[in-house]
Length: 341
Ligand code: NAD
Ligand code: UD1
Image (cartoon, protein in one colour):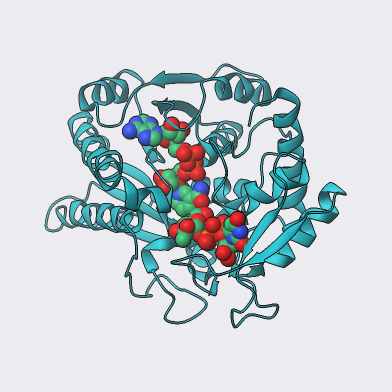
C-alpha cells in the first residue's frame, strides 16, 4: 500500500515509517517540521537503505494535502501530525485547537476529495482523564482534563461521526483510533528517537539527559502516591512495539469498516523509581534525583488493559523495560555526539 504519514518526521511517525517500509509498504512523509527536523529523513534512508519521499507541508493546507493524496496514489493515511505538550496546551489553546482539531478537519476534507477513506489516528490515553478503575479498558469514561486531551477526544468524536455518516449506505470509512499510553525508547540503530526541544517535560527524555550529563538531576514529582514505592506508575511502551501496532491496525482495516478504538499499551505499570533504576542499569551511570512535591494534574497510576488489541489486531508488545532503556540510551549518546538535543 501507499501510506501517507502526517507528522511522519516526528518521534512515533519516524519509527512507524521504518516498520511500514520494512513490511513492504511505500511510505510518504508529510510534515511541517514544527517539532522535528528534515535531517530525520536522511537517517531513515540510512536505516532503510532506500529513498524515502518526504513532503514539507501543513495539515491545515487542504489544497496541498489533496494534491499529495492524489499524486502519490495514497491508499491509507496515518495521522500523527499535531501539537502534543499537555502543559503548553493550557497556555496556547488556540494554537492547539488549530493544529489538532482544524488539522484533522482539513485532513478529512482532503481525504474525501481524494476519495481515500482509510485512516489510523494517533489518540492518547489522556482522553480517559483521571482513571476511575485500573487497568483502563476502551470502555472507560472519557473525561480529559486539559485542552490537549479535549482536542484528541473531539477528533475521536469527529471520526465517529464521519464513520456514522456511512450508515445506511455502502460503507466507505475504515478508521482505527489508537490510544497510546506512554511511548519511550528508540530504534535499535540509535539513529532515530525522541528529540524534545528545550528541557523535556516527560520522564524518560529527562532521565536520559541526566544520565548523559546534560542535566544535573531529575526532580521526582511526589513519593507519597498509593503505589508500591510512592512514585507515579505509568504504562511505558516501546516506540517500536507501538509502531508495529500501526501495521497491525492497517492490516485490520483491510477487512473492517467504521470506527474502531484500541488501547496500545503493555498492560504493565512501572514506577518513576523503577524507570530510573532500569535506566541506570542500561547506561551504567548513576541518575541523581531529588524528591519534589507532586506535579499539578498528575495521577498516581495509569496502565492499559490491552486485551482488545491482542484479540482483534493480533498485536502484543515484544520489548521489555531493558530494551526501552537500552535503545533510549543509544539514541541519547548518538544525539550527544552530534550536539543535537
Ligand atoms: P512529535 O511532535 O514528535 O511528532 C509530531 C509531528 O507532527 C512533528 O514532526 C511535527 O513537526 C508535525 N506537525 C505538527 N503540527 C503539524 C502540522 N500542523 N502540519 C504538519 N505537521 C505537523 O510527536 P509524537 O510523539 O511523534 O506524537 C505523534 C502523535 O501521537 C501526536 O498526534 C501525539 O499527540 C500523539 N501521542 C503522542 C504521545 C507521546 O507521548 N509521544 C502519547 C499519546 C499520543
Ligand atoms: C504525560 C501527559 C499525558 C500524556 C503523556 C504522554 C501530563 C500531566 N500528562 O503523562 O497526558 O499522554 O505524557 O507520554 O503532562 N515525572 C517525574 N519527573 C519528571 C517528569 C515526570 O517524576 O521530570 C513523573 C510524573 O510525575 C509521572 C511519570 O514521571 O508519574 C511520567 O510522567 P510523564 O512522562 O510526564 O508522563 P505522564 O505524566 O504519564
